[in-house]
Image (cartoon, rainbow, N blue to C red):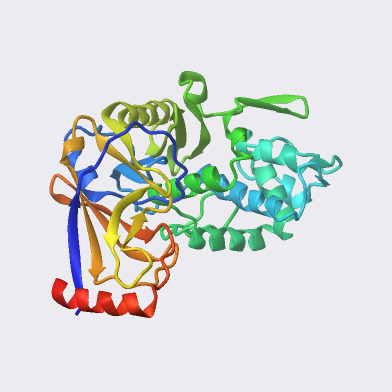
Length: 391
């Protein structure tokens, strides 16, 4: 007869040594417990994401579909980075901008590409990321996918793969369109994906200026000058969307991502983003509970060459908690019993469930950290008898 065994375990709280997360996972109890101390921002929507522990610490209207403006270029860059990784072209490769790419629409940001002057992919990426240049965005779209329409299909495909369910793109620049939208939640996912998937290109987001065609352009992300810990990422603005900013900062080994959408001024998007980042670093502590492949517990095993099997969280476990509240975090292990050999390395054995202030916090699969084969037939028979009496 199968049954579930639940074990309460003690948690240690060592200081963070480092982590490499990849995806957002909200901890509902954490957001609820800190709601009273959280800042209220003058923005249409915002979200604070702890990249290191993969937790959403604060959000407001985070799934509302909003015009992303030039924050669109985060995905333009992501698709271009992917094409570079697939060796479709190189950074030093030159292209000749088309008439379509260099055309001017409204008072858009440009690096003033010349139809008669070849430009490298590296130059286009700097124009896209530092200057937020629409002509660079269109030129990259045509280089990757022949035309902007086909490129937006790639953008939407990547958005779907990343889980950006509140997002749809119709262009590579962010020019307004009723069918062109995203959300604070999705833009945080995308920013984290850039950091995780293409770290070799991320330093471009920290550049304060870029000179092309003898014109020096400055990055509109003011936090690059105001906060030494901020090293990216992207601004956005149209008359209809307001002023927006995705910013990320790293203090020691701890990285935060803030998304602030729809403020009323360039100054306000910077100050509200700064408030959000400061809230994350000042009002929370981060703890590295388990290292990669560290045993969480030893689970009783029957009919194997060993009587127990070591179980743990394959990639380790890091959590972020409100300052002074770590005693409110509790952990239990749930496994299906009896557990019988053979057990393979990486096989899921159970679940580690975390609660915070007696409310569900998060859960993680517990896997075997080593293989355990079947024991000989004589010993298996003895274990069968032991199992009967153990019940």
